[in-house]
Length: 82
Image (cartoon, rainbow, N blue to C red; front, side, top):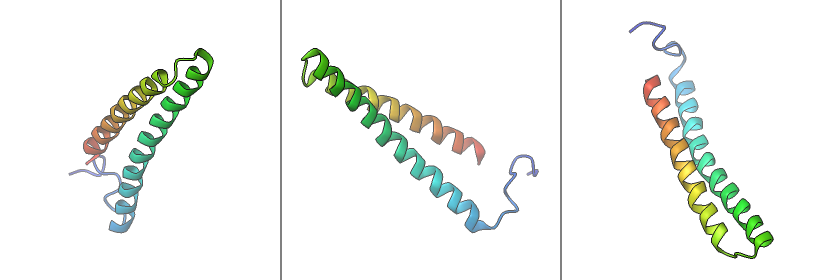
């Protein structure tokens, strides 16, 4: 394999592992953030429109879907890098 395919292959193994763990923890943070934002927007809209709890539930579902989609894309990019 060429150096172009694996630009960090000369890095010490610990550094590559740390970067991988950070990428995985970032995936978890993305999921938590998207769900939180979805619920927050839904709750705000519920308070404005008097539709409690329907828009918060919709925000939860949309946030979870967006989070899982982003996690899938991040995992695909990580797999392509290997």
